[in-house]
Image 1 (cartoon, rainbow, N blue to C red):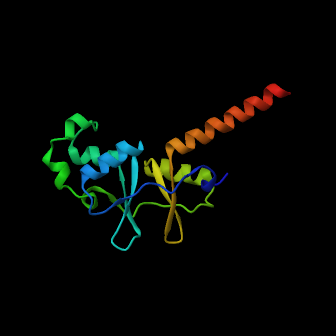
Image 2 (cartoon, helix red, strand yellow):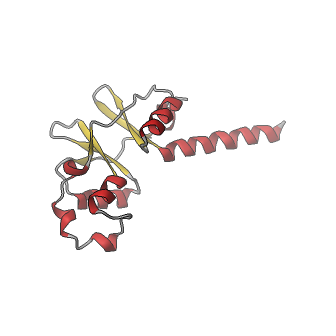
Image 3 (tube, one colour):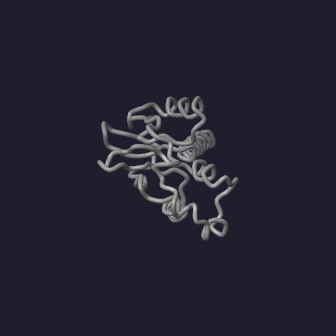
Length: 145
């Protein structure tokens, strides 16, 4: 199984000059925890995680009520809090190698690049869903014998 088999394709992105408020609204709207960050030239320059946002806000959680009136989120730019030059994988990378990289580096997502183009993102949720599907298939096969 390769990354391309389990990744989320066409991930929602954010621009490096967008504000933290924009990022939080996007994460809430999409229901995601990681946003690849796009630079001036249209190429990926970083990744922004919910952890980066919580760290920037010095908060253990991100609650809409807690940040709506906060001046900081409207002034702080994504480029100031993103992780620049993140570890990336290619679509044909074996899934277990992606898992190894995530565990070794204590990260929960990897942008998936084909050459210079962002084609997807693989997250711990994608991996858990793949594991659950494999587990279900193996148990369905066991019962049919």
